[in-house]
Length: 510
Image 1: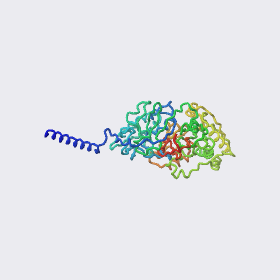
Image 2: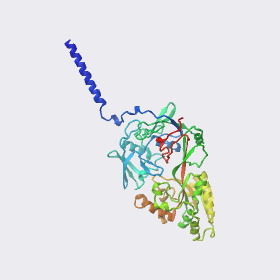
Image 3: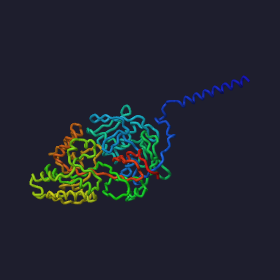
Image 4: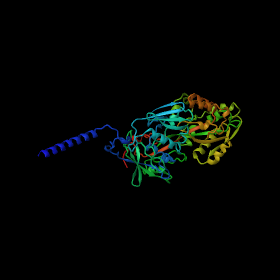
């Protein structure tokens, strides 16, 4: 009996000991292994409802290998970046908590408690890896061209080294941040930490709401990806309800009619007139100013671009907050000024009652936007006794003629980087600098002073307006077509088309 009692006591003591260990283990405050977030998302149900957006299987879905506008519009759904560009073209903190720009060194500190969709912690090493992939990619190589290196710093920081000082350097840090070593080949779907993550439902690829996202979980739980490769009119798929959204940057100048809701997406694509300063008359700043004043920019926006553009007489984007809030911008008129144009021309014996002038304007034959713009420019200048012969060329022939200097005027569009980098115009080797005489140019020095922080944006705009080395016409827009089921406001920015998708609410689900 005594032996049996002893055994019972030992069993009881072991039971109590096990219970104590279990209690201690459950109440532990130790962090999870590998930096992973504690598994609390099991209690969070996937939001209901679904929408359908297009992509193409003809292009990669890896952001460091993709090339199409269609697939690149998905990036902001799955990935976040250190900064994102808002509708005023200003950088806003995303993964970055703070920054310090001193000379050629840009130091960025990551926000706390960042995790990828698989639960692993997001660190500075992941940012460095993502930068190196982005630096060599089609989508980001130009944006990152002024950054020569990137390395980890102390305190979960990243140190970027610039090749030249740039007051707008933050706007270049918009590359997607992915988990280290998950983006090596174009067939891989890198791990991100956006509000959605890739999911394979049988043979269909979808996006599922990321329940580990540090921000707001979207109301719509599933985004179905619909392949529209080979479909020449995907806008019509929105009208028929087969897809809910379709974004086009309108680079093909094809604006088809749609039976859906539509919003303009402001782009950083500048349309301008290149001017050959070797011409005896076009070398005169007053003559270039006269041409600029005679052009009816609002008429071009309305008639050539059907409203999908914004007039500008400045090389900077009129929607850029740093420019639009400057005194120089407020003082500039965007409409035509025939009185000033006549005054500038008549002072040198030209104009409606003076000597006739003849110039040739080169234009890309493949763009209806460009053809219609060239015609409207010629029509406006004819009122001032300036005859414009529009010469239509294919893109290769146009490039060859411009590079050889065989032009008086040429009409072109150029993509300006998020940092508002105009060095393409003000560098002797820039792709948009053809025809500019830098020996007599003051705008390039004023621009260099502004970018380095030694001058102001107003000083540059004043210098540019005085000599007008080239003639800005407008900044083009893109177009987002979307379903009438959406009952929320759409906030779409270039590079962040689905910017406020967590807030979207639909009248009914598919």
